[in-house]
Length: 127
Image 1 (cartoon, rainbow, N blue to C red):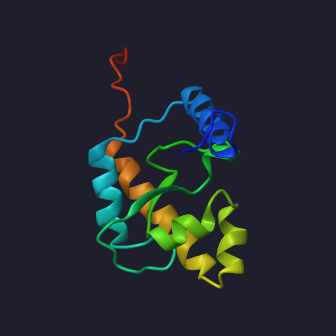
Image 2: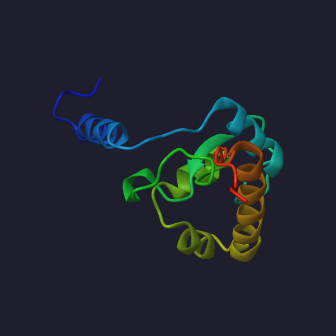
Protein backbone atom coordinates (compact mmCIF):
# COMPACT_ATOMS: atom_id res chain seq x y z
CA UNK A 1 0.00 0.00 0.00
CA UNK A 2 1.42 3.41 -0.97
CA UNK A 3 2.44 5.72 1.82
CA UNK A 4 1.08 9.24 2.19
CA UNK A 5 4.10 10.79 0.50
CA UNK A 6 4.54 8.36 -2.37
CA UNK A 7 4.60 9.50 -5.97
CA UNK A 8 1.31 7.72 -6.67
CA UNK A 9 -0.49 9.41 -3.80
CA UNK A 10 0.88 12.85 -4.71
CA UNK A 11 -0.10 12.34 -8.36
CA UNK A 12 -3.60 11.24 -7.33
CA UNK A 13 -4.02 14.33 -5.13
CA UNK A 14 -2.78 16.59 -7.93
CA UNK A 15 -5.19 14.98 -10.43
CA UNK A 16 -8.11 15.32 -8.00
CA UNK A 17 -7.42 19.04 -7.55
CA UNK A 18 -7.07 19.54 -11.32
CA UNK A 19 -10.36 17.70 -11.93
CA UNK A 20 -12.16 19.83 -9.34
CA UNK A 21 -11.15 23.04 -11.17
CA UNK A 22 -12.76 22.15 -14.51
CA UNK A 23 -16.24 21.33 -15.78
CA UNK A 24 -16.52 17.72 -16.94
CA UNK A 25 -19.95 17.37 -18.48
CA UNK A 26 -19.90 14.11 -20.45
CA UNK A 27 -23.14 12.22 -19.81
CA UNK A 28 -23.64 8.46 -19.98
CA UNK A 29 -25.84 8.91 -23.07
CA UNK A 30 -23.09 10.90 -24.79
CA UNK A 31 -20.45 8.30 -23.87
CA UNK A 32 -22.66 5.51 -25.28
CA UNK A 33 -23.18 7.49 -28.50
CA UNK A 34 -19.43 8.12 -28.81
CA UNK A 35 -18.67 4.40 -28.43
CA UNK A 36 -21.36 3.47 -30.99
CA UNK A 37 -20.14 6.07 -33.50
CA UNK A 38 -16.51 4.95 -33.33
CA UNK A 39 -17.34 1.23 -33.26
CA UNK A 40 -14.09 0.38 -31.47
CA UNK A 41 -10.85 2.03 -30.44
CA UNK A 42 -10.61 5.50 -31.97
CA UNK A 43 -6.87 5.12 -32.42
CA UNK A 44 -6.16 1.58 -33.65
CA UNK A 45 -9.75 0.63 -34.65
CA UNK A 46 -9.55 -2.59 -32.64
CA UNK A 47 -12.99 -3.75 -31.55
CA UNK A 48 -13.02 -4.02 -27.80
CA UNK A 49 -15.55 -5.07 -25.24
CA UNK A 50 -14.14 -2.77 -22.59
CA UNK A 51 -13.35 0.60 -24.12
CA UNK A 52 -12.03 3.33 -21.88
CA UNK A 53 -12.69 7.06 -21.98
CA UNK A 54 -9.62 8.84 -23.30
CA UNK A 55 -9.27 12.59 -23.51
CA UNK A 56 -7.83 13.67 -26.87
CA UNK A 57 -6.33 16.66 -25.06
CA UNK A 58 -5.07 15.11 -21.83
CA UNK A 59 -6.40 16.32 -18.49
CA UNK A 60 -2.87 17.31 -17.50
CA UNK A 61 -2.75 19.55 -20.59
CA UNK A 62 -6.05 21.31 -19.86
CA UNK A 63 -8.45 18.78 -21.40
CA UNK A 64 -11.79 17.82 -19.92
CA UNK A 65 -14.28 14.97 -20.09
CA UNK A 66 -16.57 16.59 -22.66
CA UNK A 67 -18.39 15.50 -25.80
CA UNK A 68 -15.75 16.92 -28.15
CA UNK A 69 -12.69 15.76 -26.21
CA UNK A 70 -13.43 12.13 -25.31
CA UNK A 71 -12.90 9.13 -27.58
CA UNK A 72 -13.10 5.40 -26.87
CA UNK A 73 -9.70 3.73 -26.53
CA UNK A 74 -8.64 0.16 -25.96
CA UNK A 75 -6.64 -0.36 -22.79
CA UNK A 76 -3.40 -0.70 -24.74
CA UNK A 77 -3.77 2.61 -26.62
CA UNK A 78 -5.02 4.47 -23.55
CA UNK A 79 -2.08 3.31 -21.44
CA UNK A 80 0.41 3.98 -24.25
CA UNK A 81 -0.90 7.49 -25.01
CA UNK A 82 -0.99 8.45 -21.32
CA UNK A 83 -0.90 12.28 -21.40
CA UNK A 84 0.96 12.64 -24.70
CA UNK A 85 -0.14 15.09 -27.37
CA UNK A 86 -2.36 13.02 -29.67
CA UNK A 87 -0.89 13.76 -33.11
CA UNK A 88 2.70 13.22 -32.01
CA UNK A 89 1.70 9.99 -30.26
CA UNK A 90 -0.16 8.74 -33.37
CA UNK A 91 2.93 9.41 -35.49
CA UNK A 92 5.25 7.63 -33.05
CA UNK A 93 2.93 4.61 -33.00
CA UNK A 94 2.68 4.73 -36.82
CA UNK A 95 -1.11 4.98 -36.63
CA UNK A 96 -3.15 6.81 -39.27
CA UNK A 97 -3.17 10.38 -37.94
CA UNK A 98 -5.27 11.75 -40.81
CA UNK A 99 -7.92 9.03 -40.46
CA UNK A 100 -8.22 9.74 -36.73
CA UNK A 101 -8.43 13.53 -37.13
CA UNK A 102 -11.04 13.37 -39.92
CA UNK A 103 -13.19 10.81 -38.08
CA UNK A 104 -12.87 12.72 -34.81
CA UNK A 105 -14.06 15.90 -36.52
CA UNK A 106 -16.96 14.13 -38.27
CA UNK A 107 -18.13 12.23 -35.20
CA UNK A 108 -17.77 15.24 -32.88
CA UNK A 109 -19.74 17.40 -35.31
CA UNK A 110 -22.55 14.85 -35.64
CA UNK A 111 -22.81 14.27 -31.90
CA UNK A 112 -22.68 17.98 -31.12
CA UNK A 113 -25.71 18.52 -33.38
CA UNK A 114 -27.45 15.60 -31.68
CA UNK A 115 -26.73 16.58 -28.08
CA UNK A 116 -26.20 20.34 -28.01
CA UNK A 117 -29.38 22.29 -28.52
CA UNK A 118 -29.03 25.97 -29.37
CA UNK A 119 -30.79 28.34 -26.99
CA UNK A 120 -34.38 29.19 -27.89
CA UNK A 121 -34.88 32.62 -29.37
CA UNK A 122 -37.82 34.13 -27.50
CA UNK A 123 -37.61 37.42 -29.33
CA UNK A 124 -40.30 37.93 -31.91
CA UNK A 125 -39.29 40.08 -34.87
CA UNK A 126 -41.04 43.40 -35.02
CA UNK A 127 -42.43 44.37 -38.43
